[in-house]
Length: 178
Image (cartoon, rainbow, N blue to C red; front, side, top):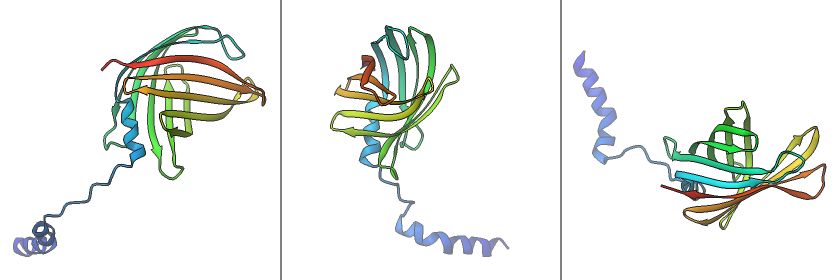
């Protein structure tokens, strides 16, 4: 009984062994490789502006980002401190091949959860445009990052309420520390 099984196994595996073939490793898309920008430890400082969605005040954050197993997503864990207190967060950054845009899933220690699609990276500028409700009114949010260098990016968050003009909510910079 053992001999026929060995023979069958050799017949099935011999062509692969002889040719030295292994399963092909999928190529990582250039858009996915660009997510590597975020891998490392980062510290941020900024400020919120007083407005329709919150108080003015100082912001600070710390986060560490790493490639997820398989190398297709980046996972970031961190903490933010601002006028409304402290919150821990987890962000998963990815590239959606079908939609041809960046995507982000975020959760926080305050019970918040958000899934954003449609991020575009043009040159060194990453932009997100989101439609959501804010206080029962239609709102558009725009988040822009400018990758100034491999170790520094600036950000600005804006909102347009009820189809009105854009108002800046927050600005700041985030520096890579390792």
